Image 1: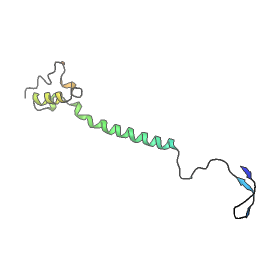
Image 2: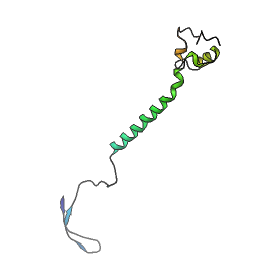
Image 3: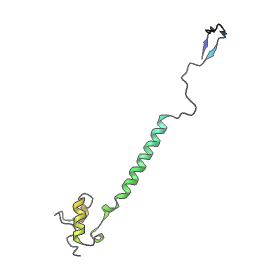
Image 4: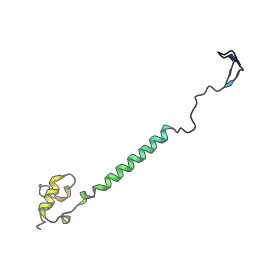
Length: 99
């Protein structure tokens, strides 16, 4: 705190000297940015976790498809997801599925 000397206003009135606080003022309702950043980070991580749960189609086996043609079309649509359909890596999915 610092003492402010008295002064005259433009209208000629005198203002008595008093102590003033020179520290920066913070509004009472304002929260720190670190708290907001943490909240946003938690929300983003939750959204990522939810989106990863929807990849359950990638866990398909040959028995999940009605025919070899259906398994082959799924395999062709996304080879990285359905890589377990082609065990011997020859590009043909579910070779033993004769339905």
